[in-house]
Length: 446
Image (cartoon, rainbow, N blue to C red):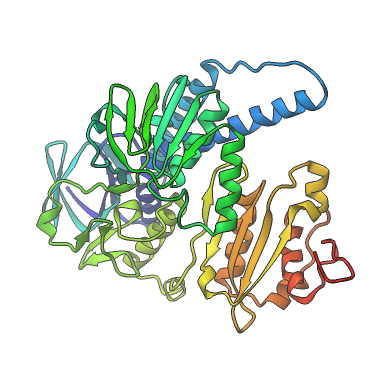
């Protein structure tokens, strides 16, 4: 059997590429080793964001009960985790169905690359004109004595009960998100980081998240070296930390398909090296977390899939537009954090707080702010949102940053009043002292 395109991996990148190419009339096979949906659906954004949403609502309900002077306890028991599993299963099946409904074929089974034009799946030889590798990533296991007795970040978001205590090794995105959600579910959580937590974050954003974690009861130990793990205890240079469950969230590494060495690709510890079209060489492409790139997220995987598909289709409309696209990042904590662009490119900044935004005052979610950064040509090159709805507001700023909109143009935009997104316009107005909703005394202090 011969296909125009064989895609190895049915995660976010794989199902998007498969669906696009099949819609355009190509004969496509998408083969997945385990479960369609990949990391995002089965181990990443879907289960973790579901637990974030649940704990966010639980926390807000507790605040309301306390505010109106009532006594109340919330029992979530097993329903919370069964609902999570139901959503995972639904989205996993949906990804496969989207490929098939588009006219593509799918198959469950491990793929082995056996030549530059053939693969083997479930014992049959399959030929292809183009190959797309979309095999994703897996947790990076740290070199710590006793690590085999711990759980990965993927395991942690799929627990079916709340441990009485938890130790998390790693202060990046996953470690911080897992720490807050399980602390809010009632676990005693200690977060251990070899440096400061969220080391790539702007300091003001990092400080707000650290305060929020500590407010929720997370014990944070920064700049700490772990010696070993033994008998349910993490032994550090500063003492022992005990946890009913120990989790490592120390980054991810590319998951390469069997037989990939036959293709002679350029691969480093961060993944497969690709060009701007996500092509590795000749007829071989790679997309998603398996490639060497800075932003390894589901939405960047979707972009990879679109670009690779367009290049295979020899598209002349979109391909000239793909250079230097900025990918947003979102941290699903309370408050959320959204960042797009590079703050190092900015020469001047303006910040507008949600505490001065009418909709936030009505709603009660007044923590956080919108920050904009502009270059010497008054183009907006950086955006940062901390607070409720950051995952949505950062999308507006992604449009702004990628189109290098001039700050005066944004300042003149009329956004709905009252709304959370007004803070974006008011941050733009701040460059011209037009942000009148933010209090400013006669001596010029804000």
